[in-house]
Image (cartoon, rainbow, N blue to C red):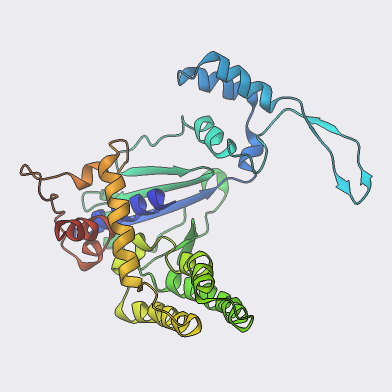
Amino acid sequence: MFQAGSIIGHRRRRHLDSSGTYARILFVDFSSAFNTIRPALLQDKLSQLSVPASLCRWITHFLTDRRQYVRLGKTVSDSVSISTGSPQGCVLSPLLFSLYTNCCTSSHQSVKLIKFADDTTLIGLISNGDETAHRREESHSPFAPPCPHGLPITIADSFRFLGTTITRDLKWEPTISSLIKKAQQRMFFLRKLRKLKLPPRMLAQFYTAIIESILTSSITVWFAGATVRDRLRLQRVVRAAEKVIGCRLPSIQDLYISRTWRRAGRITADPSHPGHGLVSPLPSGRRLRSIRTKTSRYMNSFFPSAIRLLNTK
């Protein structure tokens, strides 16, 4: 989730760091995506990807002739045989669908395609050199929504992508407000547990697992770009939990720093990560190469801020 969100944000902000640029993002959510997998076609695609033949046959056998039935109380329906799709909830299903759609790629240099299981995102990066964009700007005509196969695409001011709200103005207030609302709802249970006289250690464990995990959801993506007001709103939830538990808790700032160090360290150690080239060391090997930025929006995105943080260690 972090990888998809951070890469989308970085490519968009890096492009918009220059004047006269635009970005269009198309979010595609396939309906019943896992149910569209055809085992025979999947086996052919796995073979083309050099997957061992024995494993290909095992996967095909796993997806073929699956028996399913419905149980309601003591009543059981007749079973039916299913030989298409991949079971919902199966840990293999997202991977199999990603391999099944591996041939879906972008053919244009300015269009970036990012896939996360059945969530597909197209990022169109429009520059000054794009004559179509230039003519549209000169004529002041509104942007017409595309209509592939005659089906209009809805234009939205914001979109919830993998738990993070991406807005037209690239601000994080909707995401932070949503996280705070969820955390405050769970504070009710923390107060109930205190009334049951649970020890502070167990209350702190509950806070870490149920409340802190919400406040820090994708924190490395949005915290550096959050406003001072939004950071104070987040910290107020932490202070309220401290009063209930009766002990000090890690601040939102400290949690962001520790998560960023951990995430950046993993990216640095993983050459296959799409962002690995962005955290390259200088010839001296003691510091990372800084990313040049023109706007505070790009400067406060994950990769530039993570590099600054690592260089201060």
